[in-house]
Image (cartoon, rainbow, N blue to C red; front, side):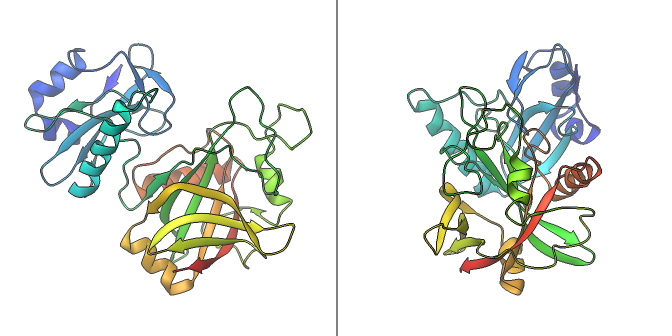
Length: 299
């Protein structure tokens, strides 16, 4: 049930595309390059996503419901850096295997590139996802959720804003409730975030005590008010997150960032900003997008 777009076919050639569709190079099972959930190309529609640098091309696989089959131009250094990172992860004890991928002819061995950005970037911390309180969350199930953060530019009217999209990997329950109900958005609205009626309208005022910590042009953390005064990390990158020049420029112009938040499974990792915008608009239509304006802390 593999889908190969005309653009992907043009890049890899008819012979390679036909071999993929015949199952010669496509994996039966894979981790979706967008949402990272397991997929089965024999049982569900699966998209081929080709990431192309100046000299390197990497083909990854995704649920068709997450992203369509497409070609995604990527900076060569960024693409090679992702390949090196995944190679190192493969060599780590107990490291999860990356999604199967196919290397186009004349390229190095294939590695999946999870959500490689075209103006967007992704980071996921290794710590459990915190609720907007100094205490840790109560998360249903045995595995704690983590927060994934996507950086991208979002147009509000005619104005481009630097934005962060925060999505947990699982439900976040209210601390002490013992409930399996996902209350991630209600926890945020308790702290001043508002449900979004239209992505075209930016949040009207900054949230008191919240901020985005940048240092040396990299994203380090989202800060919240601390019960003891000052600020505490609500989310902190496991490693400082590289952002694009355009994203940094938008932050420099306004000294603020829009933080969007959605429940688990709403958006996933979108490889392009137009796809990210479409996912945000869908979240608004379903009433599950919250947002707040956060001032910049640092440089």
